[in-house]
Structure formats: C-alpha cells, structure tokens
Length: 242
Image 1 (cartoon, rainbow, N blue to C red):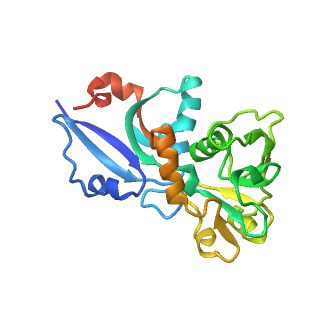
Image 2: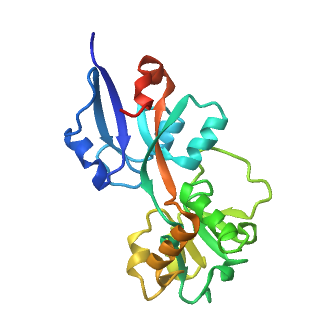
Image 3: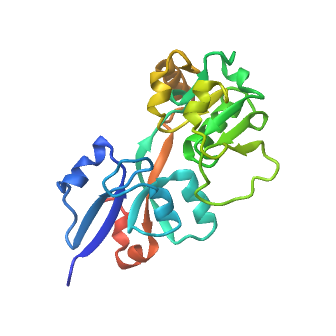
C-alpha cells in the first residue's frame, strides 16, 4: 500500500523551518510536502494562503485564519480544524497611531478612522473585541477602513466600514495622516521605520501584553491548521495527537 502524501501550506516562521527542511519525521504510511505559502510576498510557493485553502481547497492541510475558518465552517466548507496554533499575537503590539492624531489612549479611538487589513482578519476581530471588552471602547463607534477584500464574503450592513481608495496603501495613509490609526497582523516596514510620524498606541506594549495576560489568562490564537475532510476520512488519525 502506497503512503499517503499530504500537501501542507505554512508561512515562513522559525518554527516551520524543520518542515521546509524535511527534518520532521512523518508517522508510518504518511509523507508530507511542505509548501511555503504566506499572505505577503515574497514566499517560495506564493501568497494568499487563506483564500487558496478556504475557498479553493488547493492544499490537503494548511495554516489558516481562525476567524475566516469559523466563517467558512458556518457555511459548510469541508475542512476540519485541528488544535495546532502556529501563530499567536497580542493586539496591543499591533495598534499604531499617527503622532499628530491626538490619540493617547484607547478611548481616543472613538470616531476615528482606523485601518485594517480586512474586517474579519483574526487580528482585526481580536483588536475590536479587546477594545470593547477590555478597554471599554465600543468598536461600533470607530470608523474602519479596510485595505483588502474579505476572505469569506459577507454583508456588513450598516457597520461603519469603508474600503480604502484604489491604489492607496494603508501604511502610507497612516504616515500621511489620512487615517488616524492602523491595526495589522504584520505591520509594513514603513510603519515601523517612520517613527517620526507613527508610534504604537501603547508606549510600553510589552508590559501591556503582560497585564492583558494576567487579566485574561491566555495568549490569543491567530491561526490553526485546517485539514480537508476527505483526507480525514481516509486517515482519521491526522486530527488526533500522537
């Protein structure tokens, strides 16, 4: 009987290097082909990993956005998540503001224009939830500006969401003061370099993350591994710990 061969799409993190090197030993009867697929270029096997898995089903297993995965499951997408979480981030590390915006604390975000990759990106959802439940700032009172289409289409209704003008880059818009803030899972180099124009909302973000963890007791999950259900039917042990 031939071994099952799985394609496994992962981003380029240090913890994934052993997969790309082929040094992770697969269980008997199983082989894997690790593909370096990210969300921003350059990556050896391209970008748009979430779409390629959640909508195109291109891979047998892949690292995907937790929130987009949940939306996909509510629509019956034949994928199953397994409790492997290759990416965890704190929102406190990923909120930036323009220095001339007059924003000094979370409450100052009310009524401001804040850029997001997309509304349903897990970092966006986490940050909105943290603002409302942890800092007392209703996200419905913030004006959201998204830079990319949603992975899973949905109707935002009357929510305060607008799309950035075609050809406009959110990082540049923040530097230029066209938006007041910016929440991103992987901030552009421009945002991190232009410290004369941009700063983090929390001056000591590390300590704010520590306070958050002590209060909430967890390290927020961004991504999980999703596996095609047809592959699980062939080999149910794929979703079980060894």
